Image (cartoon, rainbow, N blue to C red):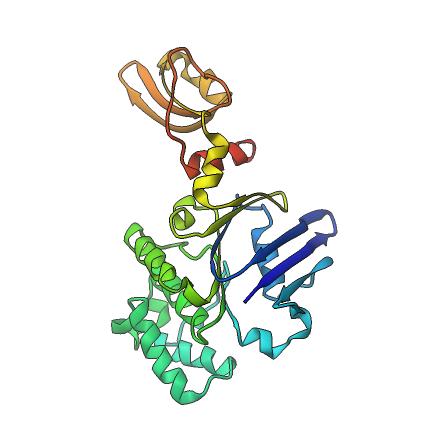
Length: 288
């Protein structure tokens, strides 16, 4: 299966949200990484057919998805950033309701609902009202509904919002195990969600992909640009204001800092191994 984005653009009245995006995706996991407002959600909504592009096309195996109708929706699973629930539904009834909207056969829907509630660790809450769920539980239910039709194209927009660290790890392991025969797109501004499970990471800024590749290749972009240094506390306010600070830790009269900079940021600073988070901060420091 091949998903192609060709010259995909979306212009609103006073804003260019997405501009001339081109890429080809096959089976695997793709991380769309960018700050809030980078255009990720608009791009995803065009891929899902929720909004119409100003220009360009989304193609699946050579066919324009705009003309595929039900055939495309049958292949698609989608978790939006803001997902609506009917609070009076139980978790089980909610999934059965979504399954009916998707046109799934009732017997299959019942079996699939039970499987998915177990998969997202909500098996014991199947008959509990959604109004009683925590934010993380609702997010896990949202992931389950996106998987109901066993989609070949799975798109998750900020999927770990509201999940605690343990749930994030479980989510990453869950998604990693699904990638063999699917195209999975995870849109996020949280580096750790995609750093280790993505086959490719596409960094988006101001409506365009500015970087594209495996995490280990992208990190080379900041090789030799990540430093650790010690700065006297009295100098820290001015130092911090002018530099991209990845981490800082107060120690007596000094501040130990990790800094992303093309040149040595302070006397005695030493280069250290870069990470994807360092790259992210370098790309978006002017927006943070």
